[in-house]
Length: 271
Image (cartoon, rainbow, N blue to C red; front, side, top):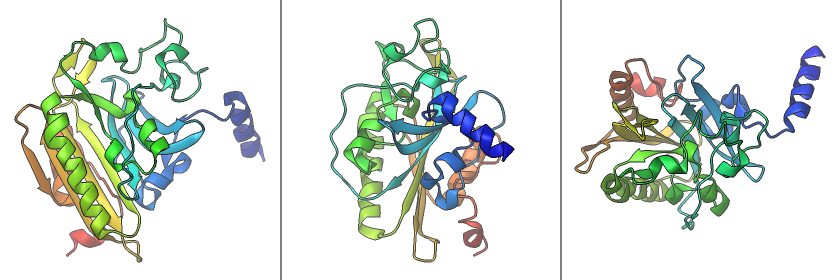
């Protein structure tokens, strides 16, 4: 009863709109295979976001407030919907202001707090980098979901040629493959590796972008799966691989154990 009262009071105090959460496996676990998220790191700089627009949760993002870029976004693919691209970008106000709402314009946050823990549109002006989506428009499950991908917590500085060329082709190829092969839930995780440079002396420029997918069959096993990683540069080096190999690559780049689809690949590794 005491726990129920505490939860109820927390809900009332936040107006039910707090989407920067303590545990997104519980709050928006529908975007993770078996409701188990990829690896999370210790430390207060990492925030878990249930990406919410107009009261609807569309995907989940694990965000690094120190580097001001996401670690990864996780989402479900349900076919190519041919969604249109939004012309404005949101931020996550609660990263900077506990009293703010969820996914909104920069003007929704006090100017003295704005951008303390996240990137802003101004960081990208004349930077030479694109706002590179993690959860992309091309793989969005609906138009409202596509709109919700336009938040800076779902973007990282990306080389324009890589973003508009090689990586866009990766997103398209994966979507077409999954649409032709999978009739059951598809879980995708897309992330970045922090680099050594900073845009506007504030926002980390990733060295790599990566993505992995798991297509579940009727027995809740990954009938199709795979991963891709590419260097964030004009002449990008892009490699496709199995999920196990991508996990080892991420482990080398992060310097720590990294798991993408926990539990689902234990049976696969044993083969």
